[in-house]
Amino acid sequence: MNVFIDTNILLDLYHLSGPDLDELRKVIKLAENKKLNVLLPAQVEDEFWRNRERVIFEALNLFAKTKASATLPNLIRANPKSSELRQAVERVNELVKELRQVADDEITNHKLKADEVIDSLFKQCSPHPINTAIIDKAKARKELGNPPGKANSLGDAVNWEWLLQGVPNGENLVIISSDADFESELLQGKPKEFLLREWGRAKKGDLELFKGLPDFLKKYFPEIKLSDEIDKSMAIEKLENSFSFGATHSAISSLQKYDDLKEADLLRIINAYTSNRQIHWILTDEDVLSFAKKLMLLLKTEKLKEAAKPLREMLGQFETQKAEESEIPF
Image (cartoon, rainbow, N blue to C red):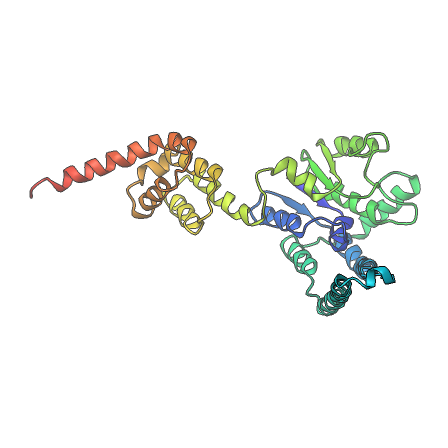
């Protein structure tokens, strides 16, 4: 799945009302596991660095307004509780000052959590250079008045021309952008009709728009609640699709480290054991057998117990065969 993330999505991570950083972590993990092809032209990275300081400055100015105060008239001041209120006000303002100092240090040293996550994105999905041919096409697009873009900016047109050039024919594209440059004036949350028609004509594919990472992830990866769950989900998928003994052993090794398997995870693993012949053939291998026995200890619901009946029977047959073989005299 081809996904273009606009600069405004990255800058939103610094805003007070911006998305949770874990949303971008999920995207990075999905890209690492080849579930997403995140498209980042150099224009996005350049625009991010041009605007990062401004966005942080605006966020800090808003935070600076977070100050507590209490006006105590005489009739309230006489109450013994009033001293507790004054102390609480002082403590709040001390915390605001401390948090601002920590933020200033992190900003200076590029240690903000948002910085770290965005750096990970740029490392995982290396921004691609923009050539002069793309810039020329973007200028022509702007002169013709064709979307996307603002009257005083070339950036969106550059990104769009780069996408038209870089995405293979016949493939779909998802755009994640929070501003109106790509959005239809008539149909909220949908791409502009001009862009839909242009993409369909030029690339023979579909175009989809999301206003933020949460909406995109909710539609395409609803089962993933935390970024840490992605590696686990991918390990289960490798077991489900293992096509060789080596792949099965590798998947089992990856799954061994997880002690927080949920019911949905266990159902997938049990189904893999019972439906994948590659696993059947090496069920008696030490690691595969040991993990299967571990699964039997995690069946806490009737749904899991019912799903595990075939696997339990397979394990029982193995134990019976093993007992019979041990009784054969030599």
